[in-house]
Amino acid sequence: MARSPRKSKSPSGVPSGGLRVTPLGGLGEVGRNMTVFEYNGKLLIVDCGVLFPEEHQPGIDVILPDFTSLQGRWDDIVGIVLTHGHEDHIGGVPYLLKERPNIPLIGSQLTLAFITAKLTEHKITPVTVHVEAEDIHQSGPFELEFVAVNHSIPDALAVAIRTPAGLVLHTGDFKMDQFPLDGRITDLRHFARLGEEGVDLFLTDSTNAEVPGFTISERDLTPAIDQVFATAPKRIIVSSFASHVHRIQQVLDSAHAHGRKVAFVGRSMVKNMGIARELDYLNIPRGLVVDFKKLQSMPDNKITLICTGSQGEPMAALSRMANGTHQIKLGADDTVLMASSLIPGNENAIYGIINKFTDLGVQVVHKGNAKVHVSGHASAGELVYCYNIVQPTHVMPVHGESKHLHANAELAVKTGIAPERVLVVKDGTTVDLVNGKAAVSGQVEAGLVYVDGHTVGKVTEETLKERTSLQEGGAVTVVALVDADTNQLAEPLEFVTKGFIQDKVIFDGAAKKVSIALSKPSVSEIDDLDQLEQLIGDTVARHLDRAYRRAPVLTVVVIDA
Image 1 (cartoon, helix red, strand yellow):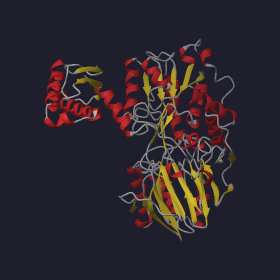
Image 2 (tube, rainbow, N blue to C red):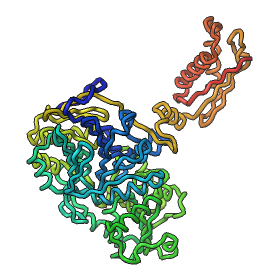
Image 3 (cartoon, one colour):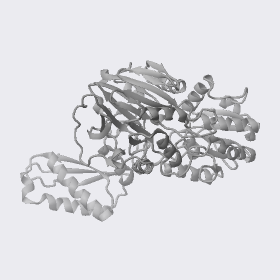
Image 4 (cartoon, rainbow, N blue to C red):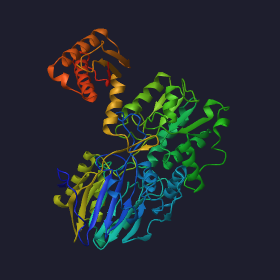
């Protein structure tokens, strides 16, 4: 299998008549999906999502794709295709449109409704192009043909991209549920027609490539969800993604069947479910959903709450309930139903919430102890099925960590695609399709861009290391009063600590080491306070690491005596 070059190199210009494909996110991670297609000087973007932070990224709200390679080329972008309405595919759009607000957004009805509502919060009025399955739309030099695919959200689309360089088929996120709740199956006949035409490059969802067989149907969850509603003695609190319309429909159906009322909790949940209901993607019987305040006066065994926080996000409703900081206080015999998957990296946060609820006497039903979640992604059997139907010339696995991409590549090879025609690449790798042959051509910047409150891209890896050090080791400030002529201490060092357990013996040892370091003849020649601060800081840091096994954030202040 062809792989990315080990050393990064700047790509040359796109070959004449060639199509360049550049993933800027989603390859090597589960999230921030974004791919750029370039032909004849024009750019088409497919998806622009976010990645949610892990524990080693404290203070970060979301992580964006890197737009560096697009700088100076905003006017060349002819459109952004949005395959579906999940955050990992649309969450980065507001930040991209701040560079050029009138880039057309191309997508299905529900997807456009979700992104339009999100953009309203950013005070951006988008230019939207509504498309449906089977539609063909011309966007600059790119002819786009849309294919119905099944996912864990309604209205998902795959997109075929035609240029004179060849035909590319991008699946987006998909699976092959044969009994979907909305009756909308993945259109394999359409895939086959494109295969007959000749797919030169097939970009396929890799998230479930390691899972054997076929992903089970959403309908298979109904008995387990019904069992929760039939047996729960008090309140039921359901956590889900705010865009997981299918799962929430199942919860609503069970609540209605068991005589419970429902309230949505959390701004994003209320907003998205309102949109889904208005567009008839969510069927809500009259009187089932009520205002949260009205629900509070009802008996506990008649209450169902649907909220966000299924990934352990600290500010989401579910986490605050677990920590006792939400107005909803849970206790013995309440039931929490966690109806979403675990995104890699969030496991510890989710298990922490489960433990806190368990300590409160709350029964927690989750994927680990009941069949209450099914993936929205194609498993290995489905991927192989698609490879055999489409019979592409080249394959480029997308959407997943490295292990998922490689597992997907191996499936493609097993179906008879030559290993050299299966491109396993990472974010930022450029792949050129020229005369029916796809090959790696270079690398562009594709780092992690952190959103911290209202700041974008200002947080660096060094910032995160400092935050982690503060979290683990606290902070120590060293104040040194130094004789300006000799660079010797005029008074004993002063140590000020925050979150660091002060031990006089250890600090005495650090002070002695600093005195020794300053007594060296070469130190008297230093006339730069920054150099003195560096010398003192390095000396104290080494001592604390050896004596205390901690690495606090150190700040040194040198004052001339």
